[in-house]
Picture 1 (cartoon, rainbow, N blue to C red):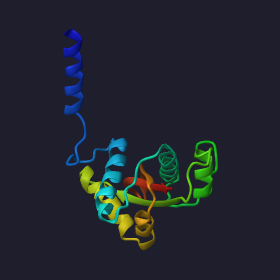
Picture 2: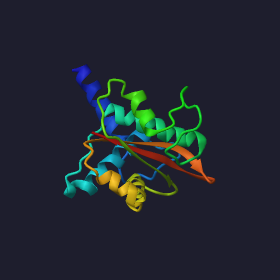
Picture 3: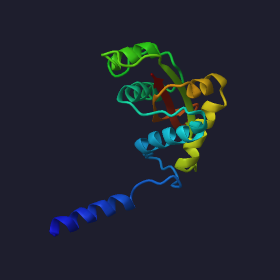
Picture 4: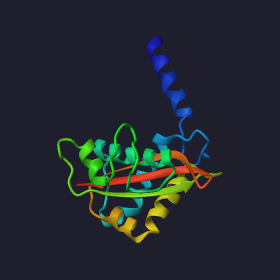
Length: 173
């Protein structure tokens, strides 16, 4: 009985402190939460087109590498010129080959953006990120392409003196 009460307490305390979509994004942003929320909003906005992205460990590793690269070097780019995490992965093909050593993924694509965060809720931030992608025809086409696997990764950083998140979406078949 004591174990059950302790377990119940832990579950309830964890729920009471979890993020919600209406929470204002704090300085110590919950990156895992915003990553999953961006994917959720993306899937909601594309559901009528039968384009649904399922997260995959390879697509996430590629996206996380690129978003953290951009945050480290304060650039929004698809082409990496510097060492990051001990390697230089210049192109999306390099990232795919590095993380997908068995060659399970085919036909890859990547989208990148930066979104500022000031007095914004998690839901507003996720929508702002997807709006950034949808306002660019090449990014929109990439998202609406029929890639069954996809992940988004956000990394906190600054760009032109503004705080925000660098975001990479990585998609594949």
